[in-house]
Amino acid sequence: MKTKTKLIHGGIPGDPLTGAVSVPVYQVSTYKQEGIGGHKGFEYSRTGNPTRHALEELMKDLEGGKAGFAFSSGMAAITAVIMLFNSGDHVLLTDDVYGGTFRVMTKVLSRFGLEFTFVDTSNLDNIEKEIKPNTKAIYIETPTNPLLKITDIKEVAKLAKSHQLLTIVDNTFSTPYWQHPLELGTDIVLHSATKYLGGHSDVVAGVVVVNSEQLASDLHFVQNSTGGVLGPQDSWLLIRGIKTLGVRMEEHEANTKAIVNFLNNHPAVKKVYYPGLETHPNHDIAKKQTSGFGGMVSFDVGSEENADKLLNHVKYFTLAESLGAVESLISVPAKMTHASIPKDRREELGITDGLVRISVGLEDVDDLIEDLKNALTK
Ligand SMILES: *Cc1c(COP(=O)(O)O)cnc(C)c1O
Image (cartoon, rainbow, N blue to C red):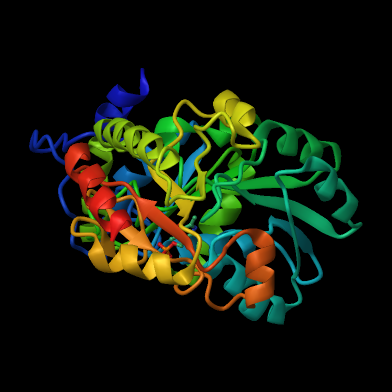
C-alpha cells in the first residue's frame, strides 16, 4: 500500500459494527465485563480506548513499526519515552532540539538521576566522542528548529547499534509522509502531532511508534502507569487530520519552494535556511533520507529592527508559536521560542536577532509572496 492510500485505509478504518466510514468517538471510560476479566479487549480507557487504538494502529502502519501510542501532547510522548530508562542512564541528544525537549531533560528528568549530553549530531564524529559506558540512547531531531540542520539518520542508527544503544527520532518536521526513521534502522520515532499530523491548529497531541515487541510492551507499561493518554475526541480529530496529510504536505512543499526561491533572490534577505537548497550543508543527506523537504523555512533579514518591520507588515503570516498547520505562521526565534538561550550562545548557533522563521501554510502562494514582498520593502 502506498503512503497516500495508507493515510486513508491504514489502521482500523471505520466501524465494523455499524458500517460508519469514520471511526466513532468512543467517549467512554470503562467497559462492561462478562464475568471477571471477560472483556472485549478494553477494560479502562487509560489502558486502552477504541478511538485512540484506531489512531495508534494508523500511526503504527504509517511509520512501519510494531506498535503505536498516542499521548496528550508531544512533551508527554517524549517524557514517556525517556521513562523507559533508569536512574544513572545517559542519553545523547541533538544540541538544537525543540526547546521543550531541552527543558524537560535538563530541568525535570535530570532530577531523577538521568544524564543528558547535547551535541551537534549533524556531524557524526561529535556523537561517538560523547558515548559513555552508561549511555543508553541517541535522541535526534532532523530537520531541526529553527536552522533546519540535518542529521544522517541511517548513519546514527548504525553507530548506535554498534554500541548497543537505542536510536530515537523526533520526526515532527518531516512526518511519515516524507521520512521513515524506523526503516532507516532506528528504534523509536515520535511526534508532536500538534503540528503537521493534526494540521489545523486545533489539537495538542503526541505519538510514539516503536519497532519491537519488547519496546511496545515496555512503553505500554509506562503509558498506562503514568497516564498521559490522548482523549477520544482528540484522537478522532487526529485521525481526521491525518487523512489529508499527503495533499497537505505536497501543497506545503510546493508553496515553500516558490517562497524559498523568492527569498533567495531578495536583496533584503541575507541568508535562507532550507534543506531543499543545494547550498544547504547537508542537502545530499536530506535528499537521501526524505522524499520531501517540508514547509519550514528560516531566513536572516540582518537585524532585530528589520525583523520587527517584517512582522508588523505581513497580513497573511500570523505571529504565533507552533507550525505545520493550514495557516502560515511567522516567528522570531531569538525573541520567542529560543529567548531562554543566552544571546552569545544564540549568535554562535546562528539564531541571530534578525532570524525569521516561517511555517508555510496552504494559502495561495501568490498572495504569500506578495505579502512578504510588501513587508520586506517597508
Ligand atoms: C512542538 C514540538 C514538540 C512538543 O510538542 P507539544 O505537542 O507542543 O507538546 C516536540 N518536538 C518538536 C520538534 C516540536 O515542534
